[in-house]
Amino acid sequence: MSDKKNLLYIPKIENGIVIDHIPSGEGIKILEIIHSYPQMKDVVITFGLNYLSTKFGSKDMLKLQIDFLDPKIIQHVSLVVPGVTIKSIKNYEVYKKIVIQPPDVISNLLECRNPKCITRSERHLETVFVVVDKQHKKVKCNYCERVFNLNELETRIQP
Amino acid sequence: MNKDLISMDDLAIEEIKEFIALAKIVEDMPAEQRVNYLHGKIMAAMFFEPSTRTRLSFEAAMYRLGGNVIGFAEQAATSVSKGESFSDTIHTVENYSDILVIRHPSEGTARLAGEISFLPVINAGDGSNQHPTQTLLDLFTIEKYFSKITGLKIAFVGDLKYSRTVHSLLMALMKFGVTDFTFVAPESLALPDYFKPDDDRYTFYETDSLEHVIPDCDILYMTRIQRERFPDILEYEKVKDSYVIDAKMLARAQSHLKVLHPLPRVNEIAYDVDNTSHAGYFPQAKNGLIMRQAILLKLLGVQL
View 1: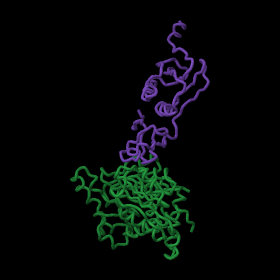
View 2: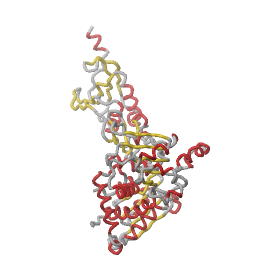
View 3: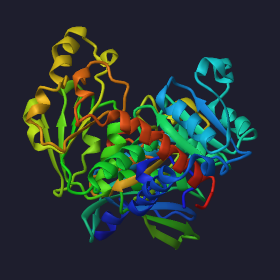
View 4: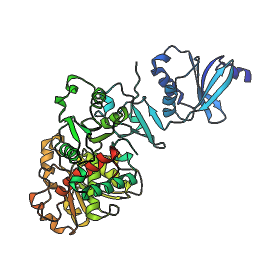
């Protein structure tokens, strides 16, 4: 029986990145984020849903066959699904592991919604948002000083 | 010390008090002594949006301190109208002057200028965001009239949605520990929620009746209702007169009540208020000249 169960598991990867301890149902959000970055379009990804987890009961998991995950993507993931674990795998072994938390400052990821904000007209300017309320996910634009709920803001991804 | 003066949010209460103390020193100083401090210095007044008071008082402040002024008073007169970016304009003008004073319709412009320029930058109003020099002169005025800021009852009246002077002053008053605020505004021009912190310490009393709040408050901070903001002119007609204050209404006020206004006024303060002891708006404008001298001295590193 247990052998059969094992067959369903995602195979170990030799080298790459594993995003683990994703609360069940949230994995798809991370997959969407990763897919929104043009450089990630061709990366081989294995996606697992509803795995047994001692921590959560069940969890989602992503395995990426890529050597390096752009810190911008990690920052983005940490905002949407905080608390997941990112593991770097070398020769089938975990050699580095971090639990990601939302940052205090979000650089060049979000687009300010205020049409009169200078970041909307000076396009070369990197946006900066300061997290003013972690619990309620409120961020403040460094330039126009407007406070937004995080979910109101679109990401600013350069194609 | 900050190199720039961009937002009240950047200033600690001690720094605000320093500006007020410095303004008091400037006020008491003989004109012939004042005129030597900024000799040989050039202020660039970059006004991408029209302004009378702020621009003229900054220019007068610079001349009073012995300095010189270059600049422009509207965007049409600049290379921005030829498509130059704001950043490039800053990088150019910073070579010609010692300090930049910037008014711009977009929000965050002064912050950007402060980040990219090696010169001190003063925000003279960025869109509906911040107007810190107005706030400092408002606080200086309040301090002069009442010898305190904390504990005063202040009612803001008029356009609380778009008025950057209200937004800046509100932020500063919170730093001074003011917790009770009264807002008198039509629903369409109410103070946006993002200016009201989610904090039990604060009480925000919102009403549309000006008459109700007069007997109770120490300061009436009036603003112009901006006709152009109303999508429906009938709506404007409906509300504009509810926020006109006259001498008769002020008969019910406490004797020490002061009416302040960043000016220009349209019809929200009747001319008969000018002759009452409540009128504080013209002295307030004069305090602007003094405070702006204090700001120029401080940011240009002059020790008094």
